[in-house]
Image (tube, rainbow, N blue to C red; front, side, top):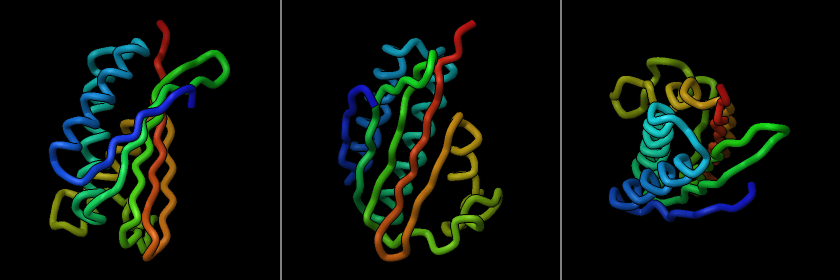
Length: 135
């Protein structure tokens, strides 16, 4: 990452701050309005997961370059209970909160790159990238 911003997630207001920071970085990178909305949605989802499952964690936002392209990287990290079955958690419709089960699978579909690492009892790190597409 070229530079990064770390937002500690401990409350709903921290989610709002992280969303705003993500939109600011996205605007600097030249993302479309639609992509800015996607970035804010993804940040909301992973930050909300931090609050619900781990109670606290962090969102790290940064600009990244690879080859001739540039984009945003979003890292959501916590030291919570971890995810015991990642393949199950990534299935559409699976939910531990009686929700629609669109969280992590939806985030994966919205981003260009997605990686999740989790260890039970130690926490979870989700790393995502979205690239600016030149027309």
